[in-house]
Image (cartoon, rainbow, N blue to C red; front, top):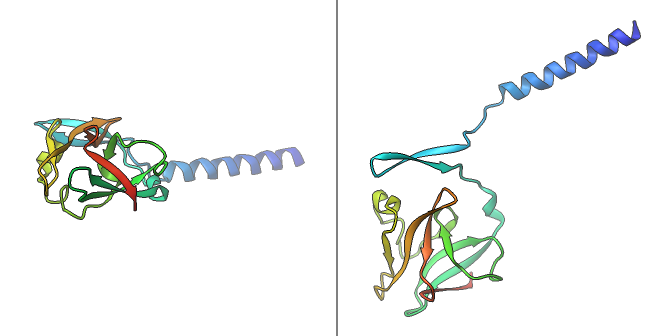
Length: 143
């Protein structure tokens, strides 16, 4: 009798745990975004980058501050790409004033608004929209 009571309690606990996990809403692993007349599947955005260090991205020719960017390891490594979701400040309104179709168009060039030099192009990296930076056109500074 003691054995059957323990078994029933374990079964009830297992049923409660599985029913809670079945009722919990799940987020989709991929998000669909229209791109050039077709649907492009992108990775689900994560909010883990809020704890990353903020660095400033400046144009090397005119020293204008282009972006504030949440970089994973701060100033330790070079800046190759900027994920759009990690850009936290846009003082010159480069990204925010651009039309959405230009942001989604792959290979489109991005220019510094003050000196008009091309510093990046749009790319999809690991399923996320990003700015692929041209070598030597931008540099990082502390926040």
